[in-house]
Each structure stands twice: as C-alpha cells, then as structure tokens.
Picture 1: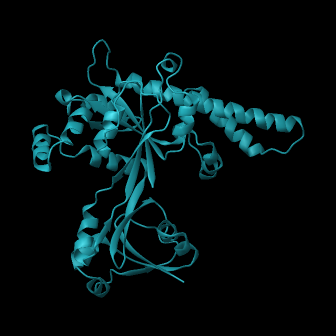
Picture 2: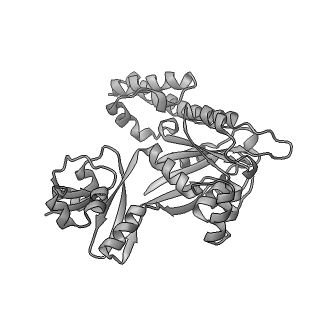
Picture 3: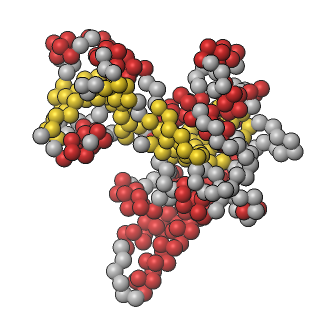
Length: 352
C-alpha cells in the first residue's frame, strides 16, 4: 500500500486536511502531543475505469487501489521553541513513500501567512536531519578504515557527495544521482530523497486566487490547492448539497481526487487491472515496471512461477466491447516478463 505522510508547521491546518481527505474526525490541535503515533486513514483511489469493468464483467466485488495517509502529530509545545521536529518524529517520518507538506494561506489572529517561508523552514529541517545521518555514517566508515577494517570506498565517496550537496542547502532529490547510487542510498531513508509535494491550504475566500504563488512553488515542487476547512465541512453534507456548494466555489475536483492525482504523479505511479471470477481489482505500479513486476504485485508466487502475461488496454476494451472482438481486431496480446506495463492495462498472469 502507498503511504503518504502529511507534515506541516503548527497551525498549517494539516489535521484538517487529513480529516478532509480521509473523512476522519482526528483531534485538531496546534500542539497535540499525547504520543508520536500518527493518525491513519485509508482512501480508495476512485477510478471510473474500474467501475466500468465491474459492470461489464458483472463482478460482485470492486477492489480499488488504496493510499494510506498518515497525519504526523507529536510536536510538543516546549520542543517547538528548540526545533520544529524531534529526531523521533523525523525517524517515524522516514517510513513513508512520499511527503505532502501542508502550508497555510489563510489568516490567523496576529500570525502572518508566508507559505514560501513555511516550505523553506521544513526543507531546512529535512536537510539538517539528512546531514546528521551522513556525518554519522562517515564517522563509522573512517573509524573502520583507521582500525584496518574493510569499508566500501564507493559508499564513502557517495556519502561525501551527498554531504557536500546537503551542506549547500540543497535537497538530495535535486542531486543528479545514478540508478546504482540511488540503490546504495535506499537503506538510509533520506527525507530529502523522498517524493515531496505541496498542499496549499487556503481559506475559502481566496480559493482559486493564488496563481502567482502556485507558479512560484511549482518551480520546485508539485503543488495542489485545497480549501481544507471548507471541504471538511462539506463532508458533513449529503452528496447533492456538497456538489452544489463545490459548484458555487468553483471547486471542480474534490480534495480526495486532487490528493490522489498528485500522489500518483509525485511517485510516478500507474494503475493496471485484474479480473477474477468474483472481482475486478486495481493495482498501483511504478511507471516503467515490467509484467514480471506486476505479477509480483498481485502475488509473490505469480512472479516466481511466471509463464506469460495476457493483456489488453482499457481503451481498446471499451471500444471493442469483449475479449472475443479484441482478439479479432488484433488487440489482445501475449507478453513476456519484460513487457513494460502501461496505465490502464488489463492483465491476466499465467503461472505454473
């Protein structure tokens, strides 16, 4: 399951955004700090293509791909004076696949709003945290070398390169790293290497009026604009009333759909579908993945015992209407394990 961590400075409306997209009722507080366990919420990835397949194949179950959102709390009031995030907090944050930084663009009494500064503040925290990891690793490597113990020279050079880049105030995601270097760094769980997008949390009065700010942020990060408090209140209404209020606000896409879309884009994901005897199901997969990877996503045994993949595209199925017609039109394909899966593929994994 994809895990997205929501993080933000105090009073950014982070938990409000979490409640909005997960339809939860987590406590909204500036410094809620009973423990460091995040609020968790699982959201189905709505996909009209899957609904269409369920109807056409007359299956009783429709299983959507899911995203788990984690609303990271745990900023204590006395700690906020020293540092924005504790080491324990940052350690917990390293477990997610991507980070959604919630920044405030609404007025609060006596507190100015400065989204760019909020982003830079969180960036600095992440950079400093990754610098500490590099320093500790280099200390271990140098100590091993001093005592005549073997150590990877290539790893040392790579960590030194990362350390230098971070020392310049730059995030590692902007360092041009090779595939093998990224593989070497995978175990470090650097925060600045993670996919990061910005959730601009605005008041309903200025929703849709932040074009210049969004363009400025998008020079560095993917960004989505949400009127968090307003949309959280919409969750209390029935669908017709909510749709009417969204129309009045010129909100064309719900917060859930916006966050789903930007999460997929940030992680470079696609969706493929499988059709079983009782269910149709959507799966998330990294762009550029193979049929063998898709088989492993469905079940590890399918990858180990892979024979072939039979596939056709959703667009072709919608056009021709049946597998029989797809075959007649030459749109039903037999693929080996190295086939690169495309978004919207419908795949049958054949295995021993």
